[in-house]
Image (cartoon, rainbow, N blue to C red; front, side, top):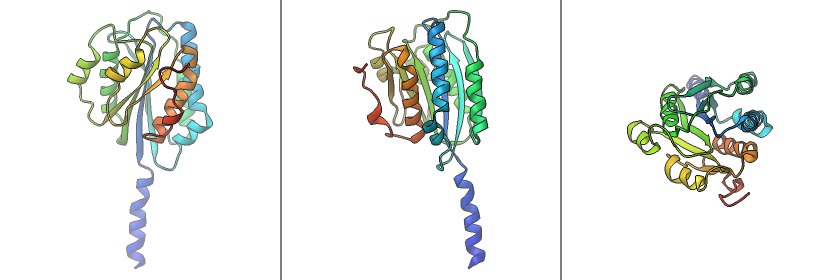
Length: 229
């Protein structure tokens, strides 16, 4: 009997190391994001990834997390800050955090090509490690105003099995939360997190990462509604 049980135990071990989440963080660096906003976003994202609860969620027993980070603005402008990396050690996560902190703000003031940013995200996700869940986390403070529309992008590109969540920074445009809810988010358990002002970004990205890392419905009660703030 032991010869039957031991192989079964050995076969069960790799499942513990499987990738549970491929998470692509898409960060808006368009012309509405000034130098101060950029610092708030950069430090907010870096600080959230350094947070004890977020790190605990990343290195949980459920399986590994794969991370990619890209900045986006105008049509054809995407900067891959962090290519896909399996966060299997604290050092791997720390290296990604420093890439965020060391990436300079783009000098050219460009428009908000949200549709093109989504297309890039779909292509990036096609190169992701084989993970149980695939999530594109889009942070932005405005509607698409250049290039292909969000709706057209979803018509043309393959988003099968991909969830697109949004973080709406509502300081510059009215009804941005509704726009994100109706036009941007897509897929299983998609949601919109809200930062009423740019200064609320650090807390919002922290909530959003926890909710994405911990799985569907977790953290929903902690997220502020569109009217809060």
